Image (cartoon, rainbow, N blue to C red; front, side, top):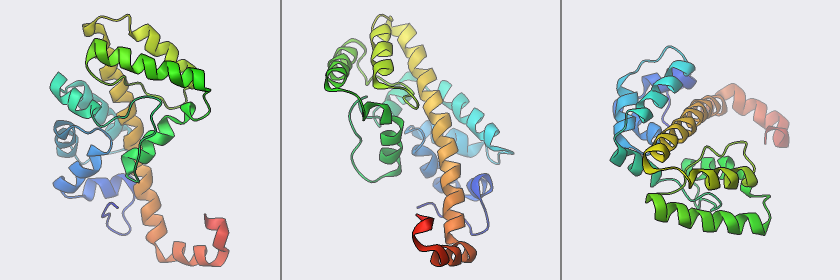
Length: 197
């Protein structure tokens, strides 16, 4: 759980973290140490959009080996990320469109993942938030027609989109943790019991 100073919320809390702690938090948004160092070093940020834009820009500036390092933290589309970590939870939410997919679509996604990895040498990455499994499968089929240079450009943009969304989630989590830790919030939760779930 992030060690946010009581009374500091969201962006202010993030700006106040020590550099190592800020980098650790950012790694949950994009698992590239180079990305985390760059975004942490640019603090303080004036607003959430400025942080999100800096995060996306830092992703686009990564070398290809650094991009591959980030991709290694992402499960295949259609696979449920295991564990209770923040990244696993976010991944499950992001891929929720596959939870309702029929077996045929999931089987085609699994086969497509293998073809993609054989062709490009890394996991198929797509910003899956809000997409149905069928859409993810259609885009996978389209991207299998890309050459390596074109596909690398798409991967960078998808990684930048995912990172922007996760930075927003990171700030929202800090807001929730500060609110939950406040004496007033604790009293309210006690007064209303199950309504606070």
